[in-house]
Amino acid sequence: MSSIAAKKVPDAFGHFGRYGGRYVPETLMHPLQQLEDEYARAQQDPEFQRDYDYYLKEFCGRPTPLYFAERLTRELGGAKIYLKREDLLHTGAHKINNCVGQILLAKRMGKTRIIAETGAGQHGVATATVAAMFGFECVVYMGAVDCERQELNVFRMKMLGAEVVPVKAGQQTLKEAINEAMRDWVTNVRTTHYILGTAYGAHPYPLMVRNFQRVIGDEARQQILEKEKRLPDLLVACVGGGSNALGLFYPFIEDESVRMVGVEAGGKGIRAGKHAARFQGGSLGVLQGTRSYLLQDKSGQIQLTHSISAGLDYAAVGPEHAWLRDQKRVDYTYATDKHALEAFMKLARLEGIIPALESAHAIAEVIVRAPKLGKDCLVIINLSGRGDKDVSQVATKLNL
Ligand SMILES: *Cc1c(COP(=O)(O)O)cnc(C)c1O
Image (cartoon, rainbow, N blue to C red):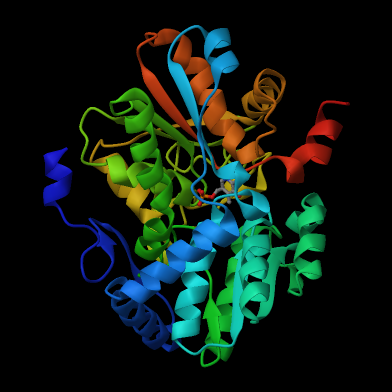
């Protein structure tokens, strides 16, 4: 896709075409500029890169395998399916890749305190983990409803020494948690770095988080070339804010032959308030620092969202995804709760791998597509996390 390569995004102000940017209160303009400058310096600093690589390898367990899902492939009877095993990382999801990068930046900036927001709790756990490892004070904001449905992760964060603040405003999920984290940051910005968990928010976060996650795609590219001596035909990943998908997709973006599909949360079906598929019925708007596709009503009020998976349950999508969709470089679809649950069980039974409910959305899409593809077709699914955090919820749903 040479047209994509020619268009350098984001621009100096963090715009991906008409998306992105920096829509924050005046008090946050300066710290965001500082962060942008420090990040630019870190990118030029071999020592920073060395530290980042060191902790990814020695602490997180990279590289993760690119695993041939032999029984799933046989069962579906079409394309050859590989799983990028981010579920095997320390703390159980891709989130830690970004947290390692950002805590190293926080250290460079002389900060002593870390804050974060979390939905499913995976980002909160990853943040609490790197904060413990580097000796930072850590506060994690989490919607009260999410605290309940992801209780195990709340305990993990507390054990790691983080303070978990349940947020009781509004829908009591991720959006409200982000509001609280931003409020905290405004107040404590001198000592505090905000580790945002996905490719979302004000510039430079979408760019920076994507770059800290691109290690997924860089590894996958090398691994598939080793195993198959050629590039894959299709990449599939779930899209919450969009970081695991961008992490896998980005290093392939200029390879025209590689198709990409992002899978959003279809919840109970595409009706207002019942899903979190921003590209199905969403529209352009500004939320929490950036301009992107949102689920909003006619007067711009943010709509309620629903997904079985807390990590995909958010009213907006990262700006780079909105841009990639406009460029027709990535296709976006959705999987419903029901199909995600079926995919969850299928992977467990066929491959001995219990996926995160988020990742199960990507598997659900491949269950639909793979049988229609030829046996010579190569598919990579980003298995963004493991399902330990979801087992009690699934057991209840399925009456196990
Ligand atoms: C948080 C999370 C997601 C969704 O976030 P993205 O930024 O879209 O990747 C997906 N999978 C897992 C396992 C997660 O923890």
